[in-house]
Length: 452
Image (cartoon, rainbow, N blue to C red; front, side, top):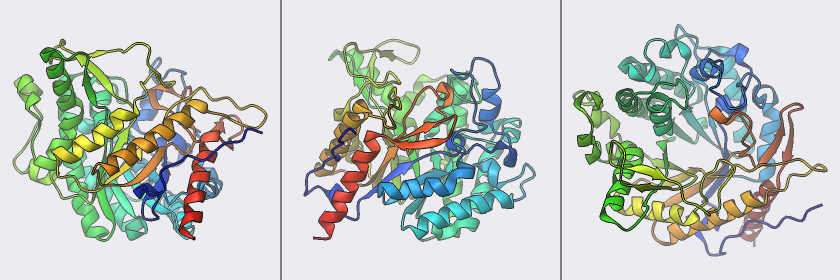
């Protein structure tokens, strides 16, 4: 049996204090399965299109979490985490006519109550990309009415779960929904238009602002915020052109979502777009989007490098001979530290939670064990990166590893494994990987230290 050490942090680190939250995260479409008891969503439709998913798979069974949730709650508790981040499937709690699906509400109620019973704080994401297909048929996020429908859906969820939820996130990674889904065509619903990508982004942000009002009204003591993903933009060379390219990429991919939330405006790269590509802003929209937040969720996996070129003045550069994950993403913990420090200096941010951080590895189950050395190194280095950022002034209050278990990895299907827990998709057997054990032991050590 392989002996696995704990992840380590300095004993005086703020992350080792009991009020710092450690957790794990998942998303509904990626783990739940049980499609017979929910509405079809855009990912069901996308999966059915030949060539869209790398292994031709879908979310019909996934990790069968709807049936195995009790065992999964025990699994989460066994890790010793303080919190669990999950997402609600819009189509599992509402029927297409807007009436409430009581069976879906009952499923999430049981899950949330079981987590609270074990003193595990519940972080709920209201939208993690699984838009009901009937809304997409009416234009999806290109249709302003979808933002209003999201507010109605949020009201139902908040009325059902209230302050049993510790923190609500309106959206997970609107960049991915808008850019990958409507602009690049890589994710559902598979559109490929810059104009549509910018329109979708605006309506997503509007939906966030409208939903914030519903959370405040229905669960005033719960925390409310949003989750954004950031891939820091680095220049390929010190040249003025490349530095400018990196700044433009940062504005387009990162600040496009943060600046409206913090400053009520889109970044300056807006001027580089054709008029019909500008977001469809109406009077009062930016004030709604700029609703005060209790926290900002930040997801980080990698950085990107840019040089001058392309229609908007920047293009990606692949750096050779650097360590990479199984997703072919560069491993760069230093960029994580700099991101947290830079954003904290530039914006008057609310407290930060790291809501996703993790790595895909080509894991194999051997003799009942899964040893994942790259993920061990990745998580250890990125935990230290967060510690360094906090030491330099970033107000980070928690860290969630992505993900609790292997699952449906969107356009990659089941080929890529991000989990701390290995899932045998044929048997649904869960096995703690070395990274899960290292996380578990770090948290056990922290508890022991607090009791001295």
